[in-house]
Length: 124
Image 1 (cartoon, one colour):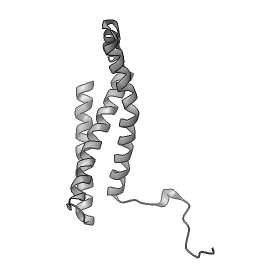
Image 2 (tube, rainbow, N blue to C red):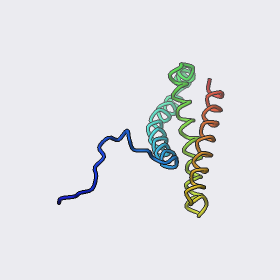
Image 3 (cartoon, rainbow, N blue to C red):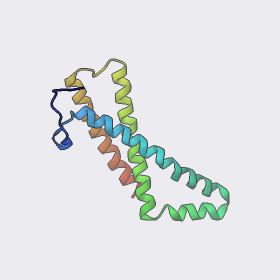
Image 4 (cartoon, rainbow, N blue to C red):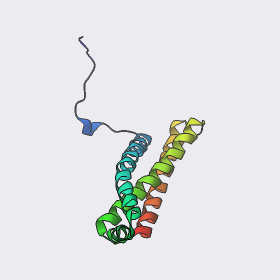
């Protein structure tokens, strides 16, 4: 097949619209939540094993790494929730135009940052 279409192999020159970035971040936050379930299940299993396991889990949550993981999971959860609601509203027929989609993406990012800061204040 001989195609005369131009081929752009330099991905750094491609500019995506803001709603595309929010959609990509929504997928990334879903992956973060999926991977984070392993940490949550381990902590849940450890805390239910016996009293020493519970005390070990509580002590482990005081470490900076555990706090960072907790903050990351809460940030991912908050953003995934906000972006999921935006997608559900778009499925219902709201914010389907280019202009309203851009505004909805901006609102999603702002709410995601606010929830991330609130999660950080709560965890740290």
